[in-house]
Image 1 (cartoon, helix red, strand yellow):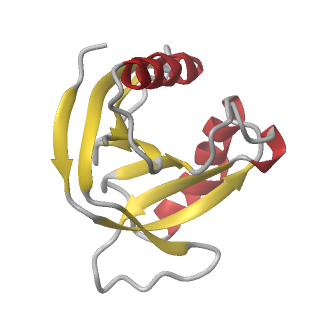
Image 2 (image 1 turned 90 degrees about the vertical axis):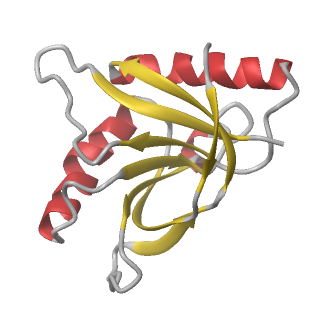
Amino acid sequence: MKYEIKELPEVRVAYLRYKGPFGAAIGEFWKEVFTPWQKAHGLMDKVTYGVAQDDPSTTPANECRYDACVEVSSGYEVKPPAQLGSIPAGRYAVVQFKGSGDQVPSAWAEFLGQLHAEGKAGAGACFERYAADYAMDPVTGVFTSELCIPLK
């Protein structure tokens, strides 16, 4: 995969946590839980992130944690059930993804495999970054995002 190396700044986020098997259930979490919460709190048209807190190849499926996040200003007051967090600053390998939700796991597997083979993958959470004007094609389910992996 062709990727870029980018220096990304720290980002303050509000997030809701999903716990369970990765895959289609995460898409449902965004659709049924996160996006309605985001709309209700006036946080649409902002950059969002999907952060995998666990490696599903080494963590039992029912224990995997995933955070659906949205950028918030320094003055934004986060109220339950949301939590306050941050995406750490650092050097990341970033690849453009375009496809449907069912293609995301294989894209991650290929990208992670490549970076591990190159000896470049670092410690820390990997994440997907979605533009503020994110849109999914309602017919095909195709969307674009960036897959980001911290570097050594």
